[in-house]
Length: 591
Image 1 (cartoon, rainbow, N blue to C red):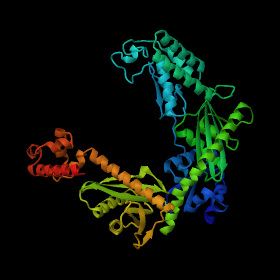
Image 2 (cartoon, rainbow, N blue to C red):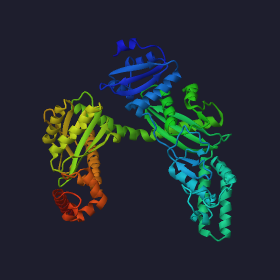
Image 3 (cartoon, rainbow, N blue to C red):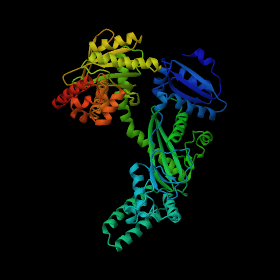
Image 4 (tube, rainbow, N blue to C red):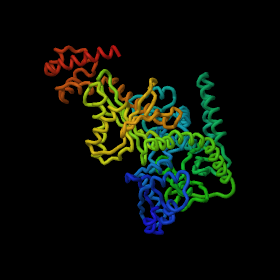
């Protein structure tokens, strides 16, 4: 396999791109020696996830680089450009909340989920394990210190000033808050004692003033803080900000743990179990680089397993990257390994279960339909109310999983209860766009219904000179998939209700129905002035704007008489609009 192509691959560092038969990049990797790495895919024995990847490769390309570091950077940029499906599985797109003390004259304390990792900000702290933990710390510090609370600067003092939680920066100018700012920075950098002392001080003041409800609230906060700090404490000789990364590998899956150590405390742990398509070393290095590249701040020090190239990672992350063999750091490194193993054992059964319902089910459907490949499925559904507000929805499943970014909504150009006409319109609009914009075609189209819908779909595809497999799904009395109608020969294929294929088709059916109905409700709930007016002949943009300006809503337009409407638009158009809305009102009341 690829023997001739492999003979020309150089023994140099670089990146390689794997393509499927649709000329779509499905995987990007880097290699110290391109020839050795590519040869390992096609001449050696591959198993597990790598076997699945290799089965889809139609051809490959490679780019030679001067150094392995250049290859690493190129790999990250190529993955960002092509977003290959197998690389997506290795990413961790989770973002963690951070606490920011803003750089304003009178700073505020806020929680940020989205941060600019390239922006140097010395007053950004975290990551915190969740939004609740970060928000609770911010709320507590805001109660203890009279920081500015408003996003903008109002003209007069507000309630916060009167309850002693703001110094009234809007009215009282040139306030020196340096001492307050320094104390807050000290707390956020891990000064537990200062925070606890400040809470106790507030409790004492409120107790003397007989504000017992406030005292009780602060005592609850004190207990929470003490509990959190006790759980966060780790045995380590310094208070440097560092992340500790370790892994556990078994049966083609890699369980990775990142422990966030901040100011000598364990703030949180990130867990991820991912499939391996490459060397463990390369998979780990890619994961680490992508983890920090998009969402998370790089700490002063990162501790990694010995199998990784610390020099390359230091260049990529622009921070100190080390391995450890003894001492307190090694104990924490071993703790990270134990966490990774525990997480693997906890998640692997669920992962295998999901594979049965997705990848395996997709493969079973491919075999039933005798397709060479089944990667992308697009399914359609139509919805209307008594022939009004006609819409269609399309959902996309990739390898058995929903790809929500590829879902599409269609507002149909006519209002008739005609499923065949609706199908023809939506199929034409969708696949004319696919041709026009050179989009990737699906391997399978699923329509809701039988031969009529299939024929409507196929006739449009033939007009567009597209060859895509089409099937219909028939339902039983419980609206559950009962059989597949093969669009090629109209054979009826019964579906075993205990099979993975049944579960996959049920999920697709439920998803496309939910998506389409929600869009239909959205159109109706707006009364969608524009959507309603679109259904009336003679109402162009100018006339629609005049009606919207005067009445503001469909309800108000319904209440207007035909004579009132004719003051704005021609009599015949006013008559048609009035009749249409009257019928719509009557139908809605019967709905």
